[in-house]
Image (cartoon, rainbow over all chains, first blue to last red; front, side, top):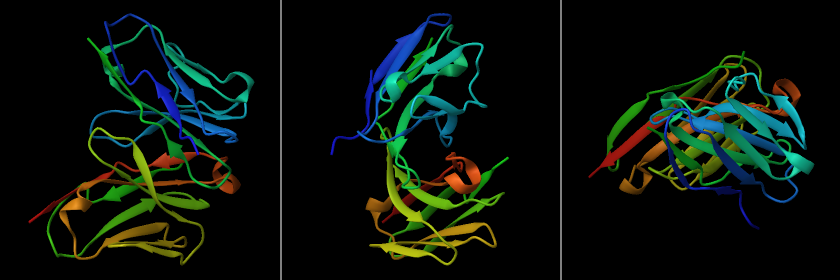
Length: 112
Length: 113
């Protein structure tokens, strides 16, 4: 079974630029999560989708972050404009209900 | 709001010793998960605990859940260097948390010879 795919693996951008991350979840997994993990901290939930609907986005900084999940499969997370404090690893995870989440390799973002 | 706290945050152990990592959470939740993360890597699922009193073991790691105390423990027996990693607990579920999965801060474990 293929795992959660994310791209790119690494991205370096200047502050105020835009960036987008892509995630392809495990086939059949209806729930998709985006997490932000700052170095030395636990993953922080940004947004949770169930199929193509948003379940929770209370921690998403909506003035600069946006996410969508078209057709209930792939998802993209965008940051526009980026700030220095957005430097982190962005993790995508997917799950079946109550089976726990499976994580992708993550995208390491550095904002300079 | 669901909060998850782990302790200790850092743990330096000698090989062959035993130790326990604690995970407390603030509100009723359905599921408790333990994950492992190696430096520069993603998160690997270790255990899923589904009910009060659940105990699961894999090799030198054993996880347990007490839903009444809102506490889970990850016990390490006779530690070896290969167990060096950061361990996270996460709490969530659909019945009480709408499918959310909230993580603790992590416990960075270093096992020294």
